[in-house]
Image (cartoon, rainbow, N blue to C red; front, side):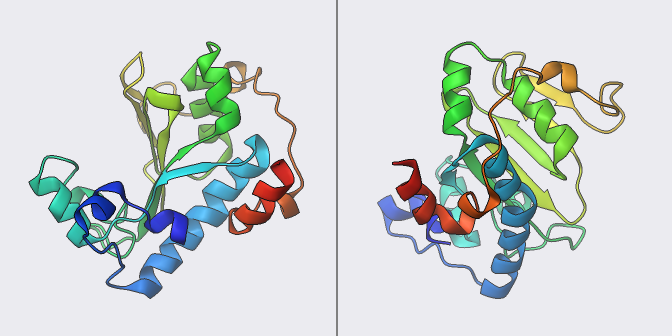
Length: 199
């Protein structure tokens, strides 16, 4: 949880980034880890967590200074302990996959990773960024399954109703050949052990 609670704006300005409802934050975060992040880590290797949980207070503080979205847009997204407008729970994190970041720097298309996630994981929302091909990945109990990007081609890659949304997209990620590692080594809850093994 320590990795997910780190928020640069909170640290810089001394705003506590603590859940108002720890039980709900932990429940949402466990779904995010077990259903999205751990399968990603098994497939592509260790993940780097750039940001995860943001309290309502941190979100409001950042929004007032032009550094983020409002509380309503972050409920059940980065604010893990606040239900969305429909009363659903959710959680998101911004992650980098170091192995894929190397492929991306070498010219790999971000869409190959996006389509792999789309075909293999029960995500709700993905949003990709140019630096290191970092991306937000959201779990929700009512998944939307939408992919957006700030990397060219920018905009919405797919969402329900788009002609490319259904079916298999394996032709886009055939080059993603990183072998799967044993699950015992790649659980997000075992980051320290994984780091020691990687070294």
